[in-house]
Amino acid sequence: MTPEQAIFAIAGPICLVAAASAITRREPLASALGLTVTLFALAALFLGLGAPFLAFVQIAVYAGAIMVLLIFVIMLLGVSHLDIPHLKRPSLQLAGPLIAAALFIVLAIATIRSALPTASTDELPADQVNAIADVLFGRYMFAFEGASVLLLAALISAVVIARKRSTANEWPAR
Amino acid sequence: MPTEAYLLLGAALFALGAAGVVTRTNALSVLIAVELMLNAVNLTFVAAARRYAQVDGGVIAFFVITVAAAEVAVGLGIIIDLARRKTSVDVDDAADLRG
Image (cartoon, rainbow over all chains, first blue to last red; front, top):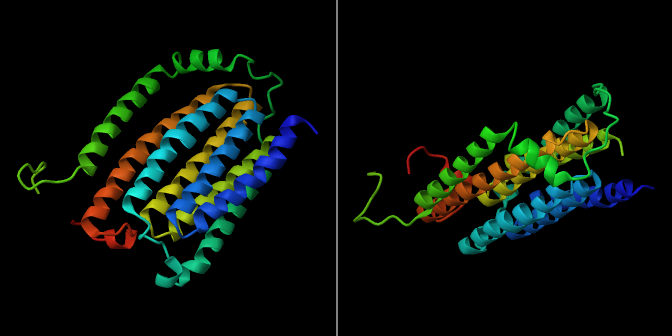
């Protein structure tokens, strides 16, 4: 058993179970914990796929920054917002598994029946950071600059949307 | 491991996330399910990068993480505003077009 197979055998099921718990638990905080475990398992899978740089970006940015923000807001809003969909809409209890099963079957058939182009015999470059930097600041330079503008726009809009509205200084006028 | 194994795992994660988006009524839970779908796609990108020995897939996954960060920041801002206006974060309470 190669290291990659071992990682897949361990992290794959963890990923699925944690994802299932993330979408079935009623408390948003429990869902967030399930998502965090999924993110760590995915980082392990990235390691197995020979992408250590992305694995650590996944842990630092996703499991670190984004999840802290998410959990901060969940706790800010309190635990009173329990999600009990099946009490409100009984049909949802059945719809969830049906939707998941139908979508998975379609995607699985598409994956199995489609002939992927033959795999490359090359190996990924051992120096991942250099290789990614070459591509990121070469071919994808404009996309990279666009992403930084997007982050700035998101930062400003998040402040504008989430700030408390005072009656004296209302903008935009509503 | 064959690439197909990763694609199937990604498909399963994506299906779980989609089911979560459709069935959850708490806006925070919906956001978490969306994150799940984004990560499922990231897994397929990284698996493809390995199969074709090109780092482009990894770079795209990098961009997806960036966009996810922006999406979470704006989404949580909207949810905080929603909680302030409606005193709930239930998506059914936000079904009308004017605040």
